[in-house]
Image (cartoon, rainbow, N blue to C red; front, side, top):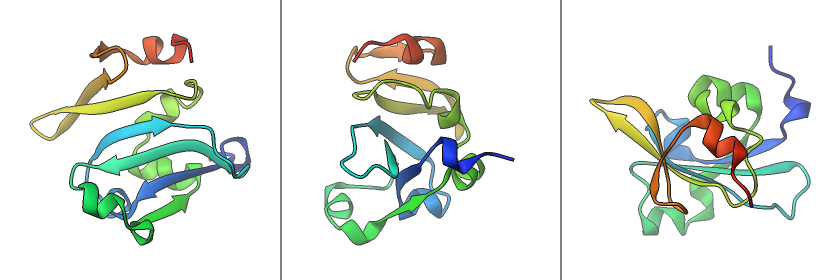
Length: 114
């Protein structure tokens, strides 16, 4: 069982909640203390979709662990983390760091500087 109080809320697109694979995750400092700064977008979320706040929801860590448990592996990554999720034949295989413009491991994500 995950202690939701240790994590705070995650902002995700409703497409991610409905099971569309995560394509993009980023962490920014939140002005709302209950949010941890993590945002997840799906592979279907285009600019028009993203512009509508009704297309997003906040979930807890337990719910996230059922949808995208990989994120909890690098939850402690610094603010400014900006990742593209890589897939091969529909299977998640890793991450591409949009700041350094290269594939990265979880260890590299966690050791990155802000």
